[in-house]
Image (cartoon, rainbow, N blue to C red; front, side, top):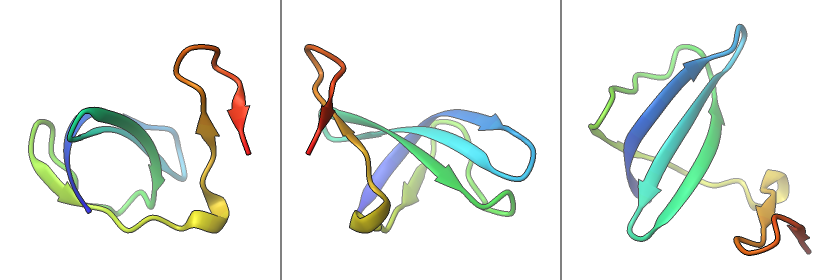
Length: 63
């Protein structure tokens, strides 16, 4: 999946990336050695077993 990096937030042993994928915005927790650059494209692979989805209107967890 192709995405564009909007925010890079190092938090110790991980990095949180905020990325745009089309019209959607995602937060991804990645390895601290991940090569991500602000406003540059990055390829992501999603692990559906570890994904958390939230309703945009209410903020409640989906599923």
